[in-house]
Image (cartoon, rainbow, N blue to C red; front, side, top):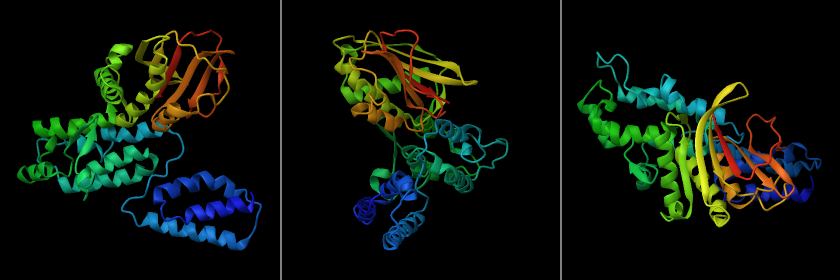
Length: 356
């Protein structure tokens, strides 16, 4: 590693225009370079260590530690979000408290305990998902953060006056027992972190495509959702996932003159001795007009999709290239799957998103 690289790192970290999150991501990217450094100028090392110490002090001053999750781990994300269903603290935000025969629900206590559990998992959640949950649970000062967003609509939060005042007027009773609070606050939040059935998945995809490309996309493309299993259910950051899926449709639209038929399915499959939900988006009769090489899709809309799918799902692409049919691992949390040539030729362009 040359001195010029060290100068670059030092200058970048000293830039006051970079916020904590950006600096943190840069540390992760530069970690291996710093470790393997061969240039041993003590003054430069002192400067880098000083900047890092200042950065860590800045992060610790936050109410909650910033997400440092850089490892792609959709299994961990699903496991953490399932705490809203099977946990002992976050669960009681979205589920009626047990012992309903006795009025034992304590809003303040339950909220504090939920925040403790959130803090334990915050660093291993995708940043956008972690921010969504934190904003739902904790009072925000800025006007635009006083509601949470799900598929374009804005909803009151757990700390809104509606919930707080209702709990004061109904001591010991969970607010989810109120039909309006359940319907307009708690249920939308549940849907923001979990695909709860096949209809929810289809509606979410349709909403995002319409929002991104306009209603005309449904006349331009013949999208068949009949392969989506009605009992589909998995935990994920729904808005973030939909942003990634909409990015996949940009190149599909560009190739709609070749074929406008899209088959979307979601079914349970067994992969590596584990049952998973596999969402497949198949552009029928749309061969790739490029030669296969490992990084053929690391550009444009595919990069956008990859960033959004990070730690939400594994993702691979299968297609017939000019030099053969291949499957490319875009995101693989198992770390052992490799790009491979397919035994059978496919005339379709296939995205497979795998949820745990």
